[in-house]
Image (tube, rainbow, N blue to C red; front, side, top):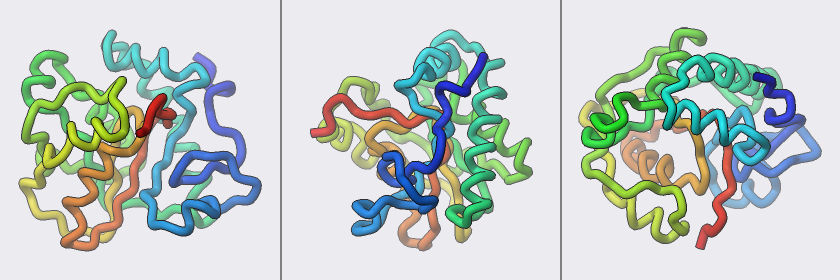
Length: 205
């Protein structure tokens, strides 16, 4: 498996994923409004979608190590140019218990486990839960995504850290991670988002 054609080359905005000419965290547009830092190794639309699907639907876990290597390389680069500071803990985006029983595994947790082992950052298990079974986000508009995930997550353990990273396989509109981030506002915890791939929503309205 070769990621050279899939991985981002140069600098991309951590807010919107657009290519930039200078090594900065955010593009000019995203600097105007606060944005989550979303760190992705690759573009979902440049060949990575197949491999993410292999993990999610075919349980091809060997692919995870290769993609995690690419993500760590991206993280290291962002640290080297001063755009990122490592978090104190990792938290995987949870599945609802019914979905977890059906699938048998949470791909976000597997990715987080690999990152935790490689980077020596604690992985916080069971502090974040999905309180209701939502319909899959794929194919939904931005408005329906937001409605679908409203109040769908709960922190069952208080987190008093300065920085954490949410781990997921793919980020599209950011609806899922934005909804989770609201839970950390009372403690002023800085939330980063690390994912294998960044995707563009076909309809964000």
